[in-house]
Image (tube, rainbow, N blue to C red; front, side, top):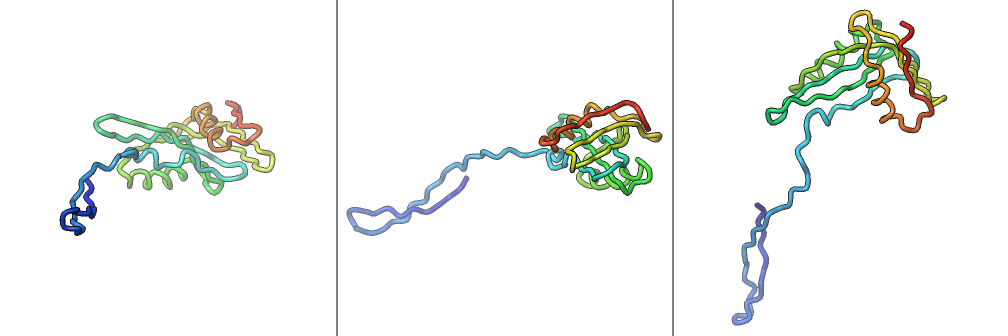
Length: 151
């Protein structure tokens, strides 16, 4: 409820009389889930390891989840990426799990991304999910594909 004061002319006294008005503010904005605040894709340029993370959050008693892709050229192991990302997610009162990994070859000059391979620690990610997320972020790329071959 929002209140405001409007001055009306009183014709008998020719004075401005304050009148308190009340009205409902329309709520066109909906509360967003913390999941919506997470970037779907955060990757580097070049060839490097990546992981697919499933993030969970309960909203109004309903379990919700989303997948996010994280890739880092400086990571020696897939677990290094997870160890960097998980604390930030958990600090926002969400849970997460790495559901697999692999490698990415990202060539922006060619507008090309190839997803392939697997993680020795987490197993092979569902590269199909990864590619769909990449296609949303890099919609202007000529080629975003995956292969189940390679390490």
